Image (cartoon, rainbow, N blue to C red):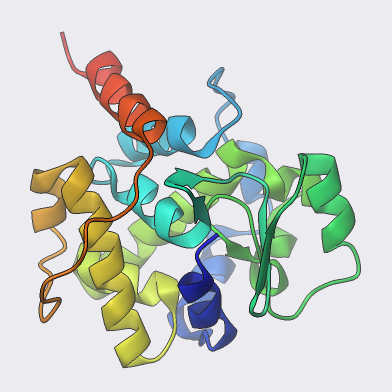
Length: 218
């Protein structure tokens, strides 16, 4: 998992993100579609993007910044302050989460345990890639409706200081530009400057490309 992402999360502000949680409602997890996709992050991000009309690759780019290890987003990723780990299984992740609340972020999209746990029926459900990503996708859509742009929505998703949020948006844009240039243009990045090519594993790229082909209209 990205140490930089973990550092961002230690200083996150609650602000509008917490308001979004209230708007989503506590029964949210029960409404997650029962897809038959693989139990991973990169397969399910594409499904959620398609269903919620989110730019192709945006959720995958966020998950790579939030939980990526070696260019692969990790469904069992956990962050406790500045300490980030990838649990050996979902059961192991749930065991590590018990008794923790403050400054704990979990799953593909690194949802805050403190502020999002109540929206899920169980810790196991919160760690489920499909539920974790679908919840984050709905949050991002609502933030976009509130702010008027995908770029500001991504900044609010990160929730840190203005400088942290700016750098976060640039990191997401950098990953997204490698996946889908048309989608990257929708972030309207400013003052990003030159950035090194992000690490995106071949399997992640293949999964994304295959999902675009599979979901393309006839």
